[in-house]
Image (tube, rainbow, N blue to C red; front, side, top):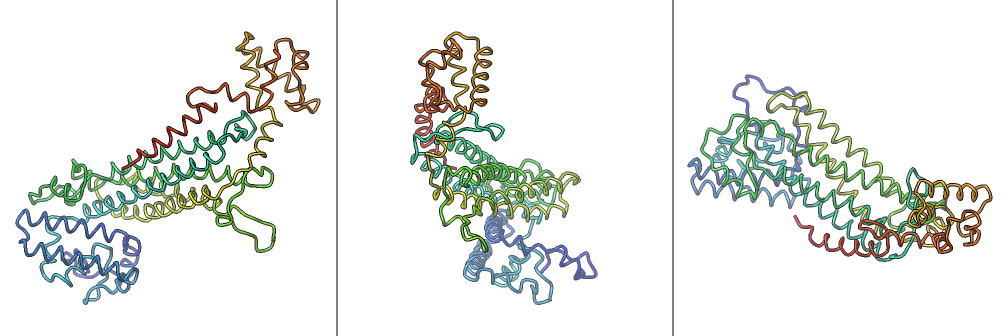
Length: 470
């Protein structure tokens, strides 16, 4: 069934039908299309196009279509390529829904498109669908953040080396490390909130590009569909896909964060680190090597991040050269949008399962910290607090590290007396800082890794998480 055709003497070619059809992917918009069309039917009643009886019949028919689709599942779309009795096909979800409406409501179904363009209808449906996806992603982000806090609570005093340039840098608490990812996901939660607000603007009444010729109460339609605002310019509404780009950007950044966590834990769970073990339920084995326990779940998350970023790039490139207003190129927004939503939600679900399964072996990262010179900054700062200019203190500790590397000594191999013999600036109490667990106690600054600061940050994170509602 076509929503157009009077201008054409001949039908579309089979090649064009196959090339331009979108039902195989925009079927995801079924519920949004029904909900938007029901609201539009009520708007048509308010301007006198539909009687109350006609509106009721149309709304009821749409409810029946929704029920039929839920009961049939994917089979609901089977045969849609055959479409109407005249042999024409359903080119997209909108034509399918209208055909189904006509089967149930009869000739009155022909009125449903009065004063409405498919341009604004597509925008509306996509916005309605995106709102739900933003809610879903935010719920999953909250679950992942909660899992991180639970994992932090299991090992509150565990010490690990923090890294810069993949080299051991300074000792930090394990919960402090996990809180870094909590902050990343918290920003993602905010970004998807921004994406929700961008999508939550109602475009109906814009027509194809010039505005509707019927006096619709656009604010009433917005209230009906629970939109916070209406679009302000009909041309912009027709050509706008910024809201889709906002979602894709938020999804891409979230996937970057997930990928970084995945990379860390792939390394930390390997034999060379041995810091942690992932549960059997989120790992896999080898078809050849019996000993293997592979972090496939994390590798897939890492791999899917590129896929989602590709979706963002694809739509940006599609939109960059389009003239005002709507162009059929914009049909190409759906597949990257749908795919990105699938991948980011799937990856968050997987990440949450991985976090819940993870077990830390605190002795291994502590040993890595104690055997390295992650305490070098602690010593330099102690010297500075005692009156040595920091540049000189930095040079002095650097020479101590160099001497230790030359002689194969670890921090614990030095005594207080030996430190003073090496340089009189070292005081006996500074030998305590040779233990990686001691230096972090000086970092009680807000946002630092001091035990009290971290305990406070964990408490605040729990409180913030409890307040994260849409």
